[in-house]
Image (cartoon, rainbow, N blue to C red; front, side):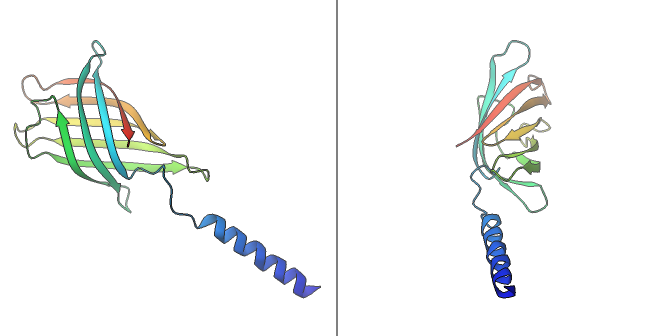
Length: 146
């Protein structure tokens, strides 16, 4: 009887380990993203950007291939940074607080800041742009993972 109980406990442990070891979550923050930013004043599209995001082990983001369209506020040499506070559940629905910042090199001192909430393959929130003449604004944005 003891052998049967030990065998059942061992089998149950293996099943639980097998259930918890799946690290292939398609709903994480890593991947290619497209953002559409709209103006708070009239809801018109301000600009769009695409980027590749990878979450680091410390919650910061590595950003690559940032391309901002339709904005003279970001011509070349942008510096990007971000963070993601991960949440979620065991069904693969990743959620969390998202922060993203872009600092322009040319023209200098323009700063785009996004804050929002990630939910699966969508991030929604608000953005602000501060900087030189014509490079101020705010509104809402939606980012989608492709």
